[in-house]
Image (cartoon, rainbow, N blue to C red):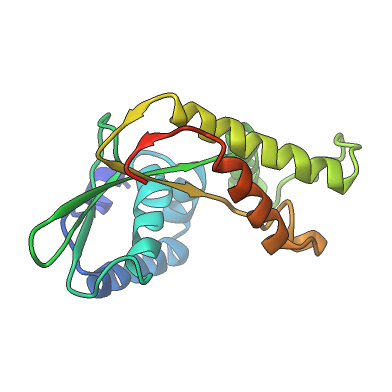
Length: 194
């Protein structure tokens, strides 16, 4: 299936409640059709945009930061932002999402899952969990520092952090990690609205 066809209406403005309906509908379709599931795992075409830009914007739209009567949309392309939030008064805010991803390993895992239904356990990393967690924080900060070097004036940068692999499954204190991360992020000089 062509991702452009499947997501032909991905970039239109939606209220938070319509965002939820759209996301749940597409999620259900993806999970119920093997071909769509495999394309989503590989992040082929607009599946990448759906997972890395639409999904975070959807989550933001469900938060207290976006009013129920606002409208949001992603914007595909090479501009300095990923999404727009339009208030009921017509004021527009731009948002840029950034997240440290293990792209190489995620792609290998996706290919293996699609081919045989499971991926490999990577046992090559012999570091203790504390060291791995510290390195994870450093990778997030390195990714954020790249954004800090760019001009994002007029844009709100949102740093996404998935703690599942590095913290949650090992029983580490997620809140403590996030608190330390925020402290270190405040040391970066972003050229952005917030």
